[in-house]
Length: 250
Image (cartoon, rainbow, N blue to C red; front, side):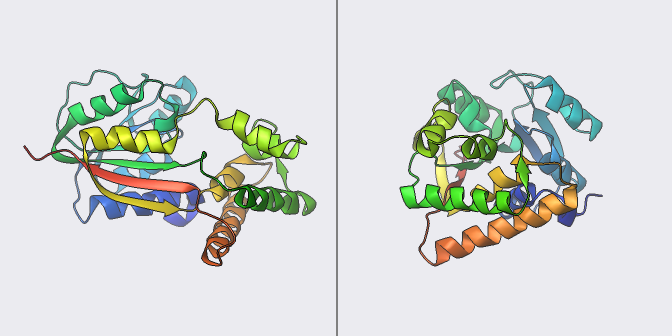
């Protein structure tokens, strides 16, 4: 069984959120859309939930299958025979799906009455300048300590440019804004819970290059705590957004 302390910090934090949203029930039927490597879905499966993942990337889908996950290699939305899922998860995936309304409608269709949609995402549009500056300074401090970021990662791109604001905009101009995602969900579901949370640490943890997993987790936790402290002292604003919504009971 996966030890949660060995999970990526981002996956660990998402797991806490999903567990709280699901409550104490076990043996639930859960669909995750866009699970990436499947770390979260695998942890939920080991908790004795029934998991189906739908992943459009053949490479990620193969990783999910190697984890023992029931995996469909399909873009979302796709037709599923089942209409009785207890929960549908979109963890940092919904913003990538082109037809947002269709994606949410398909989630609504496969949920049982009273089932829940769980969203873990971020609000890139409403990030104040001082918050972006804080993040860039975090990256520069890590760079001075000798840490490196992959050139394809968002931190790597930021460190390679002399126009941080332009890079921020270009890196996010192809994805859905959080406000639009929330509006589309509210049009089809009853929104039960919305929260603002840390998120910058996820960019750093996933972007670090050449580190063993233990060190990557250590740095992820360091940045998460620093981010939480900076928000608590009113230096920056939260980037992450979480939402739980319920399909009507009848």
